[in-house]
Length: 362
Image (cartoon, rainbow, N blue to C red; front, side, top):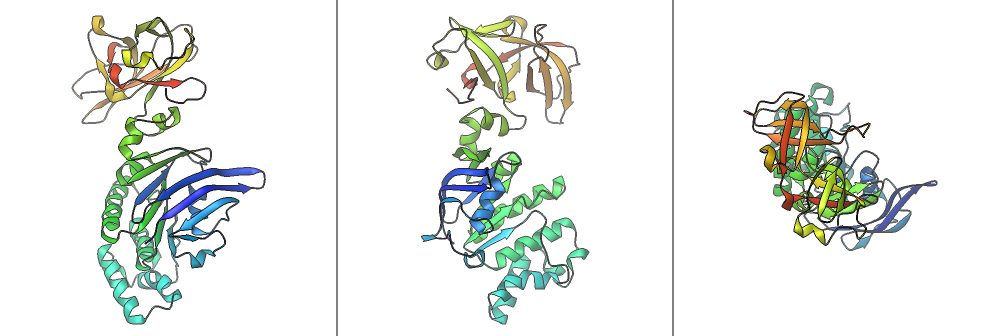
């Protein structure tokens, strides 16, 4: 096992920059998740660590060794891809043993390692089968097992669960966490699924357009997003963002208004009447009486989810071609219909203020 350190890593393809000045250090034995929308540079970072992409600028360390010029086969990392990449002509046992055979491990050691890994992944009964005889979930376990069997210093996972159905993805995600606790291999995991990121990570690296937006524990990133992009990407449903102006301690949201909480006053821009973005998560919005309401919305869509109901509402304003949208969650026994007018109260102590142009949090 080993730490992984990226020091101002940049990767360019011709005139296009895929990742820019990426700097972070994954401690020995930690499980870090790289998350962000498609095209943000997640897989490029992983491929650069693996040695499949060269570093254009910056330094990459595995352990204490600078590996910029070290070939992929000599970095002692194992990578699991989205498409499994199993050898179709080999049995499960032969696939699991492939990395060990390439390293010329003794046969007895190889066999013992294969059996131990197969038991831990519950695929011991599949060792004689070929990949085409396996389900998608079983193939994914074999791909994971092949990487684990090598006992690499670093484990790289590039969206390994995206091809699985929802239930199997949940089960395999839990197994991955248990495997990491068991083997303790330094792991970097790439996903665009923020639920996977929140449930698996010791720390999350949020990426957008090839740059780091925030690094923190799942709870830090959720509760204290660095900017609007992080706030709306992490969380399901995402954080609501409302366009507002302020004047004399009052926020005006289209034709409606409410008092600015005291703790936000010092963060407000100096120019009165300036546009700001207000952020509030759906779970911090509550149905209330008309006289206690901060805002009134018109119900557009009602989505029953069993233990809760997700409501999509709009703020009526004839001056807007596209009205502002607000999501909130209600108890399942609250009966609502599209077209209903709903008075809502915001947890003002949970209100976030973002700069309208840059998206940075005040």
